[in-house]
Amino acid sequence: MLIFAWTACSSLANAEVADYGFNIQRAELHAFDEGKLYLLDADIDYRFSEPAIEALRNGVCLSLVLRVRIKQDNAWWLEDALLDEKISFRICYHALSKLYQIIYENFDPPLNFVSYNALLEAMGSIREFPVVLASPLSQGERYRASLSVGLDIESLPLPLRPVAYITPAWHLNSPQYKWTFVK
Image 1: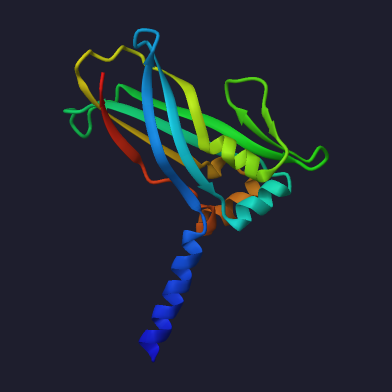
Image 2: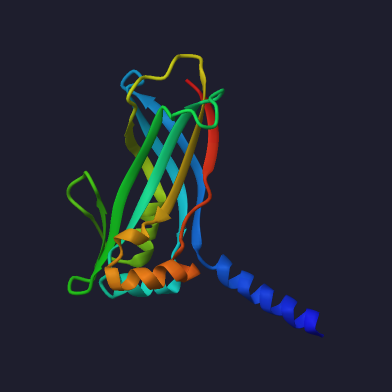
């Protein structure tokens, strides 16, 4: 009987965990401008936890960080990446105007949305986002790329951070999505 109760409780706990989290479904890079610039396309499923949604709807902007990395396919584990770029953006809700916003760090103006679902759809569909390489990739070489996304707890208001650090519902990170490509 005790084993049955433990199994039932762990199943409920796993069901709760599955209700939120980020999942990258697809990602790829396209060369542009003779390989000096790459364009990122990705599809990401964002499922925020209830505490994060409640904070957003109560005026707390949530900062997220996309991390794109490129290494040579035969590179050693500790070898530097050819590209290690972090793309930061915030999502906010403005109660007065009843608008959701995506605010990218280096782009103007913010993108506005009338519903939470429209916000999630736009966030999850990244098309032709510019990623600049410090040095061009060699023709015919094979490369490994990875993409991950996560909520930046450090950017939350100070009174909310201790709760976010100890509450699993605030640890919203995707597994690293990896793929290889040949230039």
